Image 1 (tube, rainbow, N blue to C red):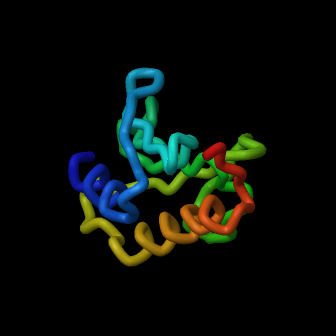
Image 2 (image 1 turned 30 degrees about the vertical axis):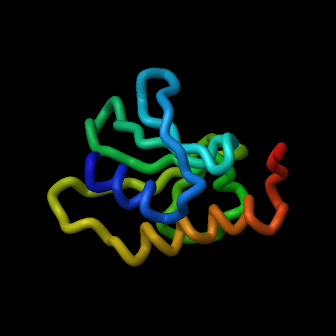
Length: 104
């Protein structure tokens, strides 16, 4: 979880960290961007992308959510760093290009 936290925070200087529902929440210019969460059934970590509906990656799971998608992390394998960074950057681009409106 600490490695994932560092990866997320390293993506942009405008990312800040807070806590929501007892779990780390990351914001881009004060707008919720992603969470680090742990699956209650498997106890495995995942990154929840708040605006996941705009992201089209086979690694992201939609489940029953209409807005958010998750990226599961296998704690027994090396982190897929390139994939994580690509998804995080594409999500950040939604905020940077105005797809997701930010109050300045």
